Image 1 (cartoon, rainbow, N blue to C red):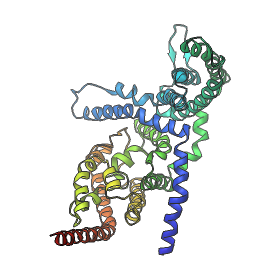
Image 2: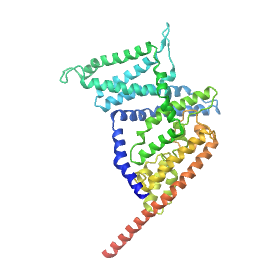
Image 3: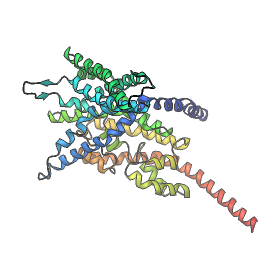
Image 4: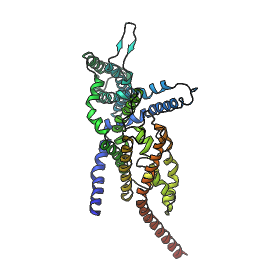
Length: 425
């Protein structure tokens, strides 16, 4: 067993970790990761608007702020269509063309929707295509535009030593790709092609996998695994969000139609509800154990880490204890990252706890406060407490072993220091 474990750690360190690191350094992957970070405030604004709308059910005198959600979270696909090509051009050192690439992304999104304009000039289109429902189109269109514009502007129409001002060169060079892209989008819709519907059908098999028990658990486990290897959980986060954001929008539509929500792979379930108490990997129970540690170093780290942990930020625990590349603590961390999402999926899919049906991406609120606010189901809070206790006892024996090792090191160091002082005296 020991030999197997050593072989596994060697493979993780020498093969998987470098491979994932190389993947995350790809320009287009970095552009998507950065795009989601950039639009996150708009997602949070939508979540706040939904929270206030919920309070309005109990306090009817509060103003109706549903429009705030429509013009923040409800425009997510449009935001990505702008930000992704913008980021690609920026990362490729072609910042002079980043703005026109982003603006072309916006134009392309509207053109692909094929809006109808009546004789009075009134435009009508499916507003849902601008939001989470159009996120896949915005993402793919953004990547294609980023690739097209970067390839084009690397060469350009003007010689490198031209004396014309840079802004003038960019204006004239931009005309051709912008015309071609918008024309292609207009022709596509004029031929009756429903790009948004086609994308939905194309990704249905992947969505089915991601919304299954195996897909749900695997996505969470991969994010946790990358984190424990010192890599960003954002490596897999865009894949997760590509499922999660349309899912919560679909749940809201189902409830509005008088049906029950069915999608579990959402930000509300994973990050605001049940799977990340204290941070990725459910490390709050571990942090509490650190506060009472016999090791002075671990106890000090625990005290520093507890405030961020309350708000589900666990970098001080992951890098301070550490868990990252610490074989002894990686084991319970990964075990928790399998058990917790597994039980969460089974409990919610079994109807024991209500599935969240409104956007509430407030994952930095302390749990279980945010847990309750995702679905207003007290059974969800009880279930959260059960998961917390399970994680506590999974971490405990491994932590005690590691604590004993660190305490022994500190004792030996203290004895060596005393001996040195005695000799010096």
